[in-house]
Length: 313
Image 1 (cartoon, rainbow, N blue to C red):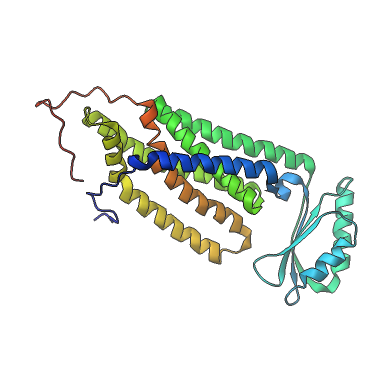
Image 2 (image 1 turned 180 degrees about the vertical axis):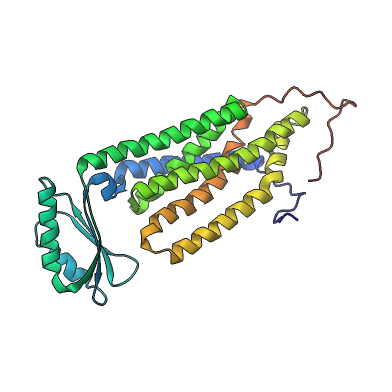
């Protein structure tokens, strides 16, 4: 027996509010691009290059003391933050002028300065600027390639009109996620890129489910106005959309609270992506079809010349 949170006979007028939803989405995209233009992204060492140390101290760490001592070394920008526990710190140091020898010399200076206050070095990473630039380019290409592949898939599975609607909704999701990271200055690294690609997959899967029902209704009810037909399609898939979104969010909330700092930003991106992706599938992707009018199909009309009655389930 299927789990149904939303009754089969639900008749929410989503299309009636589509202008409000699209207006909100436009404002969200504009705000995201504005924040990104002003603040940029808090790029991680994956992209910028530099030194990353994860250390465990003996007892709760005095971050102020650590910051003062390391700042006096003249290594440039130094970032220190708790990493899940009071006795675990994540230390970021900007890349030093020079080659690998300069980076190792900086690490040696840090370890000597911290001395006995650190009982364990859990992570020690050095990323060069060339590698960081290459990773930035690869990340951008990965996102663009994924979106292009999704466009082609939707185009061939449905029609070009559906592909345009899905791509616009997907672009909205990606820009909104980037805006979130820019506004809160969350670290943007390779894990975040993985989250964006995962969000794209989740969002397009939800959109395809709705589009499949839309296409079925278009073929079945040729004289029914587009507004009523799209509302019918969205309402018929609403239970599936809600159940999928809620169960995914429950798993992500567990990871957010118990997964630790290592995956925190990734999980935040996923939670936001699930919310905004579900919204875009219902309130953007389908209403956009009102303006690009997909074909209704080639099936014959019902023998009586009237539209068949909508099915109960």
